[in-house]
Image 1 (cartoon, rainbow over the protein chains, first blue to last red):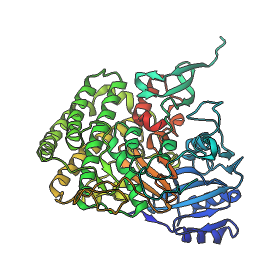
Image 2: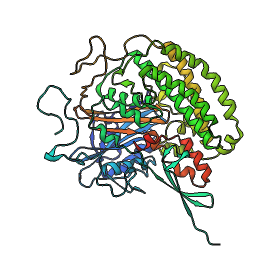
Image 3: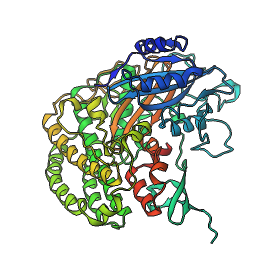
Image 4: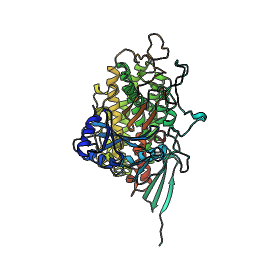
Length: 171
Length: 378
């Protein structure tokens, strides 16, 4: 069974090595400062006890006022998994350092995240659009990409016929 | 004599690209010196569409990502959603998930193996033999859920319906004939001179590069890394089943081909056990929901509001690690729905594998990656 390494433990390990890098640690994930990302990732890959030499998945989440980049890490040798996050505060021009130098597997995934979400990965060797063509207007996975008149956003807010009356959820 | 590099646009409409995939190959004579992938011809923006549909309504999308292997797509998504909601499906559903996944793996690998033989010039004969068996697997799917390709069979909390009574005898009959068929294929293909010459030492992917490039599935195992999520992180009922991880040694096209053939044998072995061990009982967990459920028949809830949070569910699909990252904000639709698709990420080291090879080898190498363009482009 792949052990989920708690974000609290992972945060502690990172804190020992880089005292100022951890921003937040929860049982499910650890958030690190974006400007220390490459150092932290290199440490996570090379530390024999953590041994996260495999980047399972890399993606971004639009949190309306900021972007989150989520890294799902895996250690094949120790059979453990953990989740790392980094935050870009500038919602207009989100940018984080690229981790291609740490894990080559980030190459296509960072291009995908750039294409669909518009997060720039500083230091990526070949950051071009991948699914959409050059000149496509905007980045469709952003929550503000398609706003309906009256400030309404695309999305299902409640189930048809569900009691509750007033629309709730994302407005 | 003055020479200059020559750029060949290979695809998107080409039989050996297995879909609409385009490679821009820079050639020096017949040798490839550079590769640029052009993808996105089949991009349907599923991740955005999923943000506007409820958790249950998103299940059909997962059929249409990897349309050669719809059952495993269903399974990966419902596992992630179940993780998010904290739902545990009943035992019978777990076993049926194993049976459907392995039937699907057999069908998917038989296409991969057959098309690889196609790519090296055995025009249509091996693939027709392989499709014969795949048809029988699809007949079983039709029995279980009414559809052959886009199955839409799994639900959050179980399955859409139980298998009909005629399923088990038909499945047993098929499983009894498959080992004979496998002997036949191995006789035909394993030592086939053309396949051996065209695939040995071609497209070598060293284990370190495979791990660093996040490659998964038969490609990773072909490079000699014994990593199989069914063993490492058992889901459904895989922890109760006895089977082996198949690994290669050289990481070339031939090893990936061998790994797939060996995994087809292992799938038969898993199916033999699962058909005997499957218990009786309900196939869907009872979940309290806002919508009306038929009396005494637990079924998939339409109005499902998972608590705010996030979950990443991963399975071993025929192509590798298929993962779904689902973020919920407590609303009826996912806040973020990301597909970690093995076909797409397995293309990461394609350039390293084809540079220095010839155009004819590039066809074989791409065939051995076994991409499904629906899953690459999403």
